[in-house]
Image 1 (cartoon, rainbow, N blue to C red):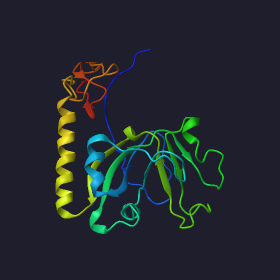
Image 2: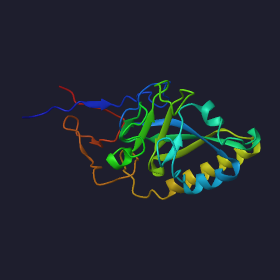
Image 3: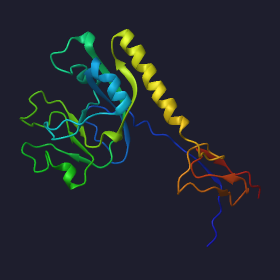
Length: 213
C-alpha cells in the first residue's frame, strides 16, 4: 500500500491554564503555582522542590492552579516574605480523589499515579473550604518558569536566577537536529518527504509539501 505524503501543521492547544474544577488530562503540561518563604526560593530554583513527607494526599509536592491560593502560603508568614512560583507541571497519570477516606488518598503513587487531584467543592470533610488540591509525586515533573509574586527586589533576583539556570541547561544541549533545531534522541529520525523529497523531521511544527501533480 503506497501513502502519499503532503505535509502537516502542529496546532498548539491552549491547555496551560486550568479553570476551577477542570479535570487534568493524563500526560499534559499545565501552569500551576506554589507559595514559599523567600528564604527557600533560591534553593528551590537551583535544586528543585523537596517533597512534603505527608499531607492531605500523602507525600509529594503540593501545588495549585489558583495563584490566589498559592499566595496564602506559607501560613503565618508576612506578605513581604512570600514568594509565589509560576510552574510548568507535567502531570503524568492523574488520580482524582473526591471522597473522604478514599482507599488511595495517600497511596495513589503506589498504584502507578504521578499526580493526585481533589476537585473543588467535592464535599470532602478534610477540606471544609471546598478548595481543590494538587499533589505531584516526583519533583522532576515540576519546572519553575517565572515569579508570579514577590517583593520587587526579591522578584528581580529570582527571575535572574531562573534565567541563568535555563541558559545553563540550554548550553548543555549540543546534539541538535539540523532540520528542526530540537535536541536529538533515539526516536528523532530525519528523512525525505515522499512527495517533494525535501529533508523533513517529525518534530518540525510545519511542513508544506511542494509536490506538483
